[in-house]
Amino acid sequence: MEKLSKEIIKKGKSLLKSGKVTKDFDTEKRIYFTVKGESEKHSVIFEKEKKEFKCDCKFNSLHHKKCSHILAAMLKEKVI
Image 1 (cartoon, rainbow, N blue to C red):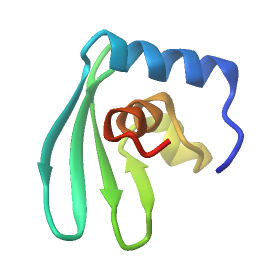
Image 2 (spheres, rainbow, N blue to C red):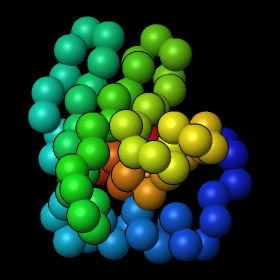
Image 3 (cartoon, rainbow, N blue to C red):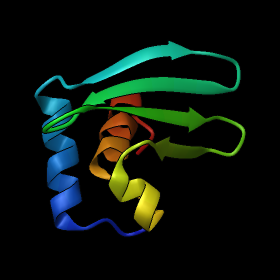
């Protein structure tokens, strides 16, 4: 797993602890989450076959790194 910054870890744990992560539904190939960020909601998808998370936030799109929303979903799903 890639190394995450202390800030992303802190934010991800805070999102989960404050109840801002919802597991919307689980299909054969994917798990869908909604994560309420500071200013907007984000969609996080876990691709089961690839064992890969994706988020629609700007940080994940620009840097291709795990964001706090992905970390929060991973913690919710107990993947890490």
